[in-house]
Amino acid sequence: MPATGITSKSLHRGIAAAAALPLLIGALASCGYGSQAEKDDANASAAPAAGAKKLSAPEVRIGYFPNLTHATALVGIQEGLIAKELGGTAIKPQTFNAGPSEIEALNGGSLDIGFVGPSPSINGYVKSKSSNLRIISGSASGGVKLVVNPDKIKTLDDLKGKKIATPQKGNTQDVAFLNWISEKGWKVDPESGKGDVSVVRTDNKVTPDAFKQGSIDGAWVPEPTASKLVSDGASILLDETDLWPDKKFVITNVIVSQKFLKEHPDVVEAVLRGTVKTNEWINANPDKAKASANAALKTLGGKELEPAVIDPAWKSILVTDDPLATTLKTESDWAVKAKLIEQPALAGIYDLSLLNKVLKAAGKPEVSDAGLGAK
Image (cartoon, rainbow, N blue to C red; front, side):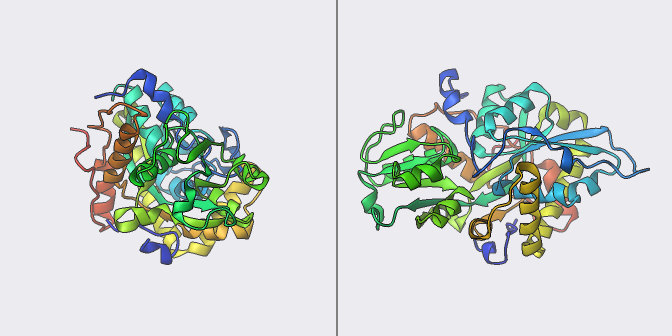
């Protein structure tokens, strides 16, 4: 299925060892500049319309991050597009600032559906021994850049000997950067980050100050952190989308508890109708959607992103219903190659049956699970 862009320009745009799990399970642990601690999103709570018909569950608990890479959730809840599909079933939103806590909530039964990155999705699936989670849709692609101090680094070869931040050891961006370094023929110890390039694991909330103070020379980070750094004087040296076929790679998935999926497939299907319609609305109304996302961020964190940050960040993110399953497998293979994890058993991690039902009803092409679907 063709991906749905945030702007018209962006349209062209066996089980892991227990000891290895913590390395990847922190993916997107601080995936956005200024993310807040997890909390119930009472202000965005969507009560059902009076007299509306309830589905098989009275409510659905949906988790997401207050980050632009979770634009589908931000806008879909803010604009009531998901609630509209749920009829008399209420949304109970909850925001998180770390993948592990959202996965824990899903595995622990206090959350039904979540928007989260590929590495936590993999680890949540593996940690539950393939028994609890399923990826049911894509949500976003792209929005990751290598930004650097232009006074110190002018070409990619200049990275050698420099200090480059990633959000967390073993997270999605850290793995991608380690793989890029390896393909350059340079050596870095994935555990310590020491080598031909110093990989400095730094929380995204801290990265802008670290850059200003000169303790790092650049960063391989997601949006809006990358654009925040650029507003502070960094320059973009590489956009990760340029490294991928078709310039697409998964940055956010929609996942569900298998128990909730089995007991309330009608609710899950309604949420997916809402996410598909949200992505359509974002594409058709890019400026309104950007304003909606920023308004949601203000509600959640008390502060909007300034235009110098949100404008370039928004353009670099692609919302998509397609989970881009082959890229999730590639990201997993990179982590194995870096010896951060053992080879995970990913068979069955996807169940795209309801999504494809929704897409077919909307006259859209079905999407692929790359052979990793539930049997």
